[in-house]
Length: 171
Image (cartoon, rainbow, N blue to C red; front, side):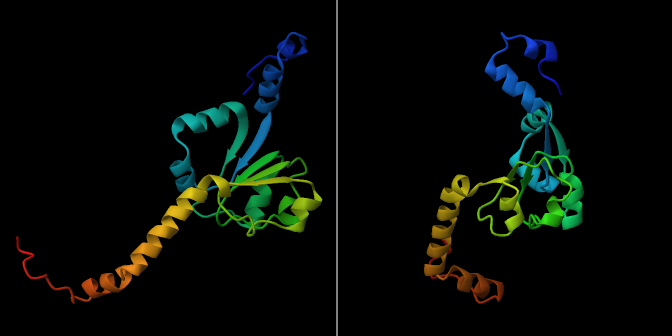
């Protein structure tokens, strides 16, 4: 979608912001997250905004793309958003994406997707690690506390029918 007409950009009065927005409107984005994961992250409004700002290829598979599927989806993309299960960004996966400049990993550690080919091509890589760090820490603390209370052992006992009412529990 073009937000500003080219004539407006040729006009020296066009602001730097208008020029950046126009340049972004030609961005080709490969969104390689399964629809279910995408729906948990983006509402209709956010999807519409991305569609307005870029030419977005939305992944439609119920599983992360295979290396061959990722290579095809990345063709012509300048930016990619990937997450859990995404293939490693090898030379083969990146072969059809000579314009790729950025990969955004919508998860923590980038180890599963990093390959020397990414660095050799000068592709910038970001991670959501900082954005999810507090939630991960809270979840970890929760699991530690549950473990200290023998939660999983008690859960198994209840499943096995070994749970007994405490005296006075009828009240």
